[in-house]
Structure formats: C-alpha cells, structure tokens
Length: 449
Image (cartoon, rainbow, N blue to C red; front, side):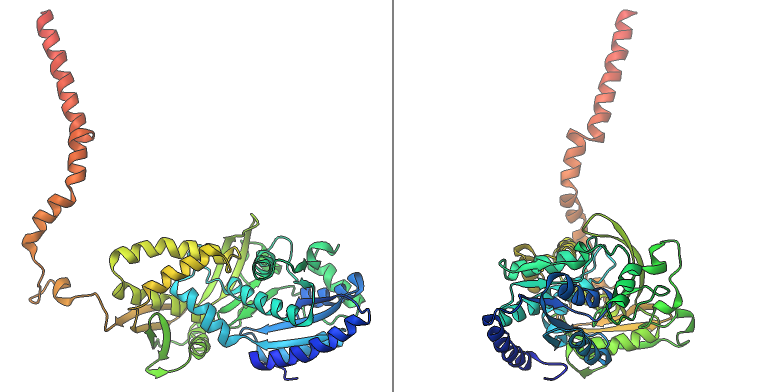
C-alpha cells in the first residue's frame, strides 16, 4: 500500500483491509476503533492506551492536509509498529484547498478578526475521512486525541455526529488519569511509545496548508515573549530581506488562480506564498483567543499564505462588491468564522452562510498586487474587469463627471428623517419647549408684579 494515497487508491486499500477485518470479526475478534492519528504525543499515547485499557483493535488514519510530508511515511509505520491493525496516510491536500480553503477565503474567515482558522478548517475534513474508514471497516467507534478543554474535541465530535449519529466517540485524553504532558511522556516511555516531545520542549504543534499553530510550554504565560525556536515558517522580521518583494495574485470568482501571471492550482499558490511571504516574516500571530469551552488561551500562529490571500481577497472585494453587500457581508463573515471555530462546519447555518458568500463572489475576478516587507504585507494595487470603481465619478481633477448640483437635493432627502426627528422629539423640540417654559415663567412674574 502506498504511503500517501488519493481517494481512489485509499478506497481500494481500505476496501481490501476492511474485508480482512470483517472475516476477523466473524471469528469473534475485538471491536475496532478508527483513530485520528498525527504521530504526536497525544495520539501516540492514545493508540497504545486504546489497546491496553480498552482492548480495541486500532485503525490509524493520518490525514495529509499539508504538514511536513517527510514525516508521513514514518507516522504510518509508527502506528503499525505500535500494534495498529491498519494505518493510512491519506493525501487530502487538494480536497482541503478546493473544498475548504476556498470557502474560508470567500468568507474572509478570521475568528475574532485575527485567527485564519487553520485547525478549525482541517477537523471536519479529517472527521469526514474517519467516518468513511469506519464504514469501510465496520467499526462502531471513532477516537481522537483532543483534550477536555480544547476546541478540537468539539469540532471532531460534532462533525462525526453530523455525518453519522450512530458512531460512538472515544476520547482517551478526557478519560485517562494523565494530568499533564509530563505525565504523558512518562507513560509513553513506560509503555514503549516513541515520542518526539520532551519535558524540556513540550510544545503542541498543528500544521497544514493554511499555517501552523503552536501552544503549551512557555507560551502559557501571556507575558512571556514567544521563544525564537517556535517559528519555522516565518523569518524574524529583523532578519528578513532589506528589499521588498511584490507578488500579483489573480482571482477568478473569488478563488486564487494565478501568481505573478502564471496560472496554477490553488493548492500550489498556497504552498508558494507560504515560502515567499514566510521569507519576509509575514504571518506571525500571537494572540489570546476565547475558546468555545469558556477559557482564554494564548496561541501563536504562522499563517503567511493565509494572511496574504485574505488581505488580497478583501482588497479585490472592495473593488467588485457594491457598498451595501460589502457592509452586510462583514457581519456574515463573523458569523461564519464563529460557526467554523465552534465546530459547526456541517450545520444548516454554516451552509446557508456559504451560499450567501458564494453569491457575492460571482464578479470577484481580477488581480491584486501585494508588497511583502519586514513582517508586513500591504496592498499596493488592484484591478478587475468588473470593477465598480469609476474614475470619472471618483476624480477631483479635470475628468470629474460627478453631478455636484445633485448633492443638495440628495442631502435634504437623506437628512429628512433626522430633521423631522429633531423638530418633533430631538434637540429642536427640546429648545422650543425650553423657550415656551421660559416665556411662561416670565409672563407669570409680570402678572404677579
């Protein structure tokens, strides 16, 4: 079986192993559980724990959503070495880019106006494949390695239940009595589980095409500056090139389609921009975010491509969307980002918001020029065949075609509601009432005299 597989190859390989698993089940073999497996500390301990404590046969599924490809073969083999009855490394990158990141870009998806949702976007895709593997193997259980106070447990379980309410969820990290990463490392060492994390460097890292998330360790103190060694996608801005670099991003109906005039798939544009923008230190985030479970968490992210593409997409929308739609869409974007952050990818609301965003992208076609320099990216130009920007209407020069004479009547009509309000209930009415009261008091004084 290939280490990385497209959907057709995956289906064939899973089908073959599922047939063997079905025969084993007829002989009274163990219950099977499909584990979302990354090869990191939590899921490696989970894999062994599910065997030792629950007597499960474990099927490990590692989704390649753009993380370090060199690790995938080792991750798959590691699961098998630890006793998994099957292990898959499924190439989900194109599906992730085309079916998930395009929707995120249409919605300018930024949770709390900052976080591009890189982990939140990958979880429903991984959940979809976990459910498919569970169906192929006849497994009744799906497991994940999420903690009891994180967001990912909600994202995985909500997505799985949306796709198949009959599947049972197993969450070892919520159930075992390992209360710290240090204890997990000790348990792993005692049970022969190889892990890369150490007590001296206990970072938790999640990476995919859309960026890289880093938490735990020294980052748990929000006053502590992030150690330099946590950053791998982005250069320190002080060490970035002294000359800016310009990139031109082409869009067709809101989807990136070219870079510097060269047509290429969206997934390749993301990969290229991660390298280009990362070299200039673009895309570092250090934020305290509000988790769904009610706690604040300090997170660091590296999102060079996401930062550039979302900024560029927003700039093109300012050119191609009418003002009312553009303003209304801002609220939709916040709802969309919150829904995705909270694990509601497969929900009626989120799908309805997708439909709205898709309707706004029909004319979002054009080119945006971005300047990358010392940790910043800025828009320096934009153009579109569907631009609503009219030079004659916008210019204050000789080309000015705006009818200045129409402004007086427009302002009178535009201000009519507040003019009426002022006269009847507002400042003008209050002034008249005050004058009337003063006149009454003066008349009373005269009469008394």
